[in-house]
Picture 1 (cartoon, rainbow, N blue to C red):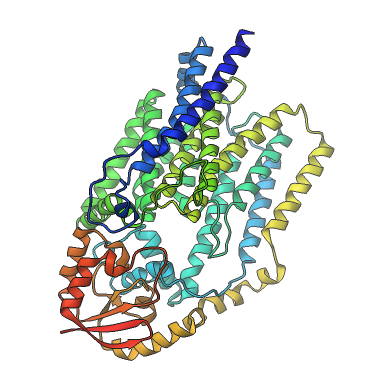
Picture 2: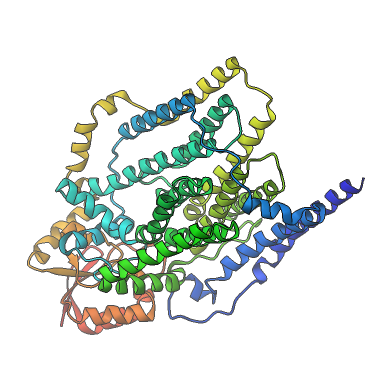
Length: 596
């Protein structure tokens, strides 16, 4: 009876903690200090850290309630915590030919699906795709990195990726640039099934159950993102560093090839920052957590090895590329400091009728469920210790993945953060269900596995004709004329501008049509090819300083409905241009300005 009363009291306090988190959400507000950046935050006098603080407090209140409940209920509370860190491996990677065969089959299905992709030709997104292609084109010409471009996402994702592919195929095209996303999506899907494969080996399920566990979670994982360029999935290939770290973490807790694993983790602390600044931040935070885990697990040698390797890797980068390192450091610091103010959107109040609130509430509650599950497993002996650790690690990944949505709380960014909490919950539930089933007979196993395989093949959209004609289709896609991706208006603009810029070494945009650099085959005269990102007073002053050597500017273009006009957002630059440049010609909504 006492236990029932405790559970009832816990449920009451738990629900109350969620209600309090919801109630105080809008009252958690840091003092706004104007940074001179025009955006939604400045218009609403809104501090960039408000949403992050609200999010963590909303998760923290019910999580602490649950921890206090566990502390009160368990007489061996600290023993369970110590066991979580210090217990030895309770399972190893046992060889399973049957599971290996299913892995090989899954890889072949993924490969066939990848080779079956239809290479569609939607019109170019001059803003988003232009951000990457124009930066890549400048690198293609002069090899410059942060010294030549103000990078907002990551030097590899934004600059090197397309440039490397263009050089590899010795051809510049929109098709090749777009193919990079398809290729990275395939790599991410491949890594995701290897992660599930290694995780499956951590379970203490019998062979048939392991295969069902592997198939179920692998199918879910690969279905979370699409090869369609314009499709916003529940997870993004930009998470490649995070899934790599998750795989390495499994090997680390098993103490298999520890030296190599620690080396790769440390190398990726740097590479992840090159890949994508936001993912790099989460990767490095997770690495710090791994260091804490190693220390409290009394694996001091591994702790010092990882710390030493990280220091050596970063120091080597500094020594080898001192100039670029300084630009990288300044660039990254400014992005962390300013970007939320540049493009931030106030996060919707959970459980409200505000735009995107339903999607946000669903994701945050799912993350909260993952937190409760990971805490609860610590106090349950029936779960393998290493499975507990991976679930806990995935929960931390899920918490971190939502930070991307807090920087810009629109529908696509919120949706993009749903994947990791979803797969974390799936891993736990499939294990729990399979563990409760006493035995899966061979007949039932065959029926269930055949059903899952059939479903996998169905969602993979494999087309034999596409697979067999992949070489010809790729050739057509790679060498398709860029004009095929342009609207009639854009074609007319390029034809109008080309003879006027032909003799110029570089041009400058004061427009959100970032793709014009690539389409005109001209590099930006300043670091600010992606003009919109230079919104702070500091960056505007740098922009103006670089404009002093510029004689040709293209302005205008279609008005956007997703942010304030450049004339308002970069008002200092706009004033400088109006004072020092004169409009000479126009084409529809675009203008050519000449100094003088």
